[in-house]
Image 1 (cartoon, rainbow over the protein chains, first blue to last red):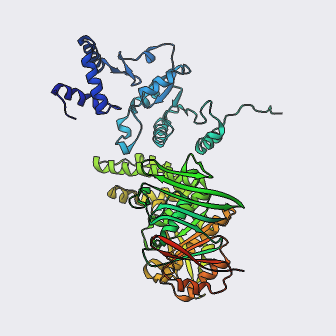
Image 2 (cartoon, each protein chain N blue to C red):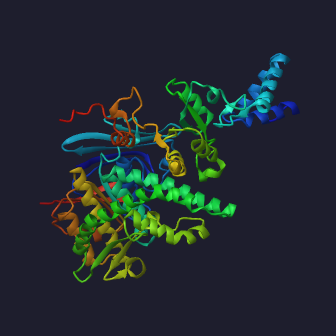
Length: 205
Length: 377
């Protein structure tokens, strides 16, 4: 691509380095910004600079936060004895939108994945173990993607947490709500059978 | 089950071809490069939605043309179905049953059971061990979908374990606990695959041996043995083995043991077929392996699969040839397609009054002419 201006070229290069954006989309975005008022573009620039400068990571859970301690961790109504461990901030957002969880979170910042060069030491694991040991945590819930990286991370964490004696559980894996049984793949179906839920227990005579 | 006719348009060397087959044995003879194998390739395409000569459909299209049509009338359990596999450049390939396109090509695979014995299958005997593992995995996966899942999971976990070993090498440190993280998950899959392979071979080896003995004189004793990389299919054996190999794995930055290092050992009278077998012995071994595969496929589907034999009879002595012909006439219930350079050779081994109908076709570049039919009983 040949650019009529150096400034456009620089902007396109920067925009195209973002995930999901190719060079053509980057050019469209750059040209769009030029058409907007200068104040609009400045507001976008400032918000990005502030994002970088002001955002912090919660001292307790590692989630993105404005303060030293995030809103969830500082909320006295959230149950501190229940900690849900997730890969990323986007998982916190997903779980929060269910309105089902009243405990607190712990964000690892990734999953163990040697193919991507990520080992346990690069993840937010030591603070989790410390948290469980010091705070009054009764149960730790793993909410990871259902793949081998998620399973491996869960396996590693259970080993690390075993000496603390805390209860460890994992979110259930099974058939998505609203899906027909016949269209469910065999692996999911097999796993659902193994992890079946008891609905009623006959009274013992 | 059999294929009644075949219609080709712009398919490899054929601008247009129309053939009616015998439900028993069909022989195509002609000089090298006349297009015999292209007919088998078309049949393979109808069974597996791709030819065996090339993985690119574009190369199947006759030179200078933009599409190919490949269709046949397949009679299965007395019900005729018109199966077509058509390809248009830029639009891709479609499989149609009675003019109705299938949404997914993969849905068709298995509905026209077929076993092909091709010259390139010789690598099963003398090629790298990966070829033999692939053959074994393909056979077992057909019967046990769980086996395939174990293979996929094992492959993913192995890639991570190897990446971990590489990471240790690059960063110049080692943590046994981190490596064992992968071992603990890999081992159940590895054990299941190893167990699946040895159980399968217990059933498969005797069938293979029967076929082999029927093709040779009693003097030759074949053996087909599974050689796993790890002594026993138990988690304990795997863990101990990994621990013993840890140093080597670290140095090589690669997992040196596991089901990805298994092999099949082929022997005749105790000698390796790969290193000491004559070309005839290697071919006989291959045919017996494939015949046993045919047997299992027939058992599984309850149908008589189609058998393709491409240019297989060269370098086999007359004694073996007549035994193979006997086998095709008495032991193979399904339709057979054979290519060979010599009409004389084939008409001699099947004889003037064969037990099953044998139809001969003379192949010349661009055309096929039906010749005589030797009626069966």
